[in-house]
Amino acid sequence: MSAKPEAVEEVAEEKPKKSGNLLIIILIVLVVLLIAAVGFLAFMMMNQNHGEKSAEQTEQAAVEPYKPEDKAKAYSPSFKQFPSPAPGSPALYFDLEQMVVGFKGEGKAKHLAVKVKMKTAYPEVVTELTNIKPILINNISAALRKKTYTEMSADDAQELLADEILKISRVALEEEKVYPDLLDKVLIERFVMQ
Picture 1 (tube, rainbow, N blue to C red):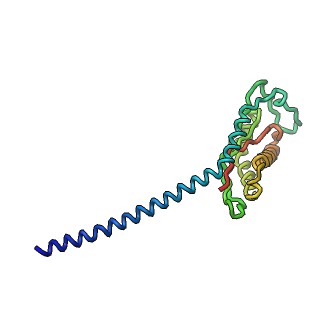
Picture 2 (picture 1 turned 90 degrees about the vertical axis):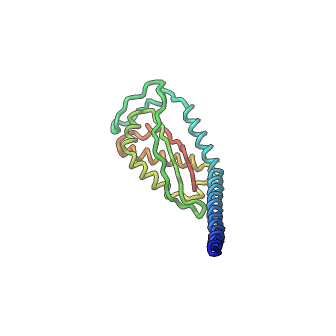
Picture 3 (picture 1 turned 180 degrees about the vertical axis):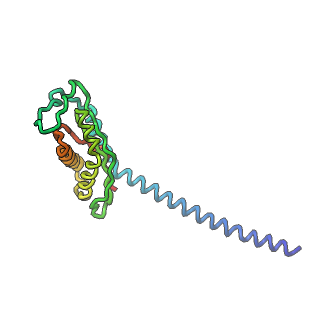
């Protein structure tokens, strides 16, 4: 009978070792989760200013009314001719999906994420933009990859980027025989460097 108590003692000694291993695993998981949470909070705090600026731009664009004289544009017959928008018609927006590119982060950031909206008064221009969407994504992504962290962290970086994307988009429209000035504005809806 003395053999059985020894076996029980051996089992009792093994259990604390297993629970010790389990405790170590749980602690490691908790530390990893804590580090991930701190990293996420730091990321959100660093990008908070960019999001506020984008929200202001988007809100300002939504409030900005179109004037009838701004909509009707006379242009060369070598371009596709579209009927003038009706007076009082709302502005139209073309959403371009978010683009995430690797860029010259100069050791501080490696990825740039940008989401843009394009503003026009002409429904036909929205259709044309839809048709050339792959070209727009390619050309805009190529321009974004050439950017540096220093350029993109400047105070006026979003405005300059919006102007550059507008120029790129107008060139693409012109290649499709669409009068480029029918595309009024580019709005940066999301701008994140990571």
